[in-house]
Length: 95
Image (cartoon, rainbow, N blue to C red; front, side, top):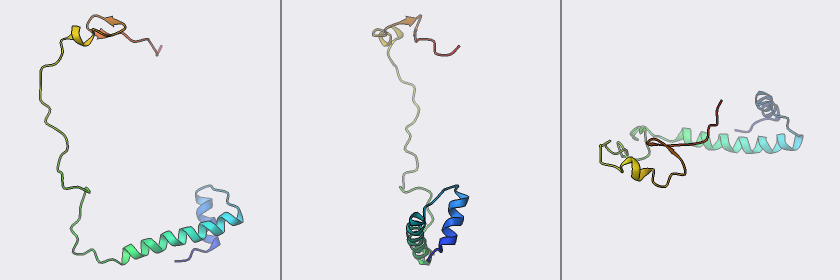
């Protein structure tokens, strides 16, 4: 499907683009190629292809959320440059 320069100008106007005449010619050619590729895809018979919602067959890649023992607060804060009680102290960034 060959796009006309008028169609390219219309699309450029909708996208609020200013194109030089050379760019209009180049985009007419490039967009025509894209539309030709889409037309080829539309012509394919996909009636026997099962619809998919994901590219892989994996149903869930997330693990179970299981409670496990962790470090005691003292060990977790051992290398902290500053702490307040059992939490990291960070510089105030908002008023």
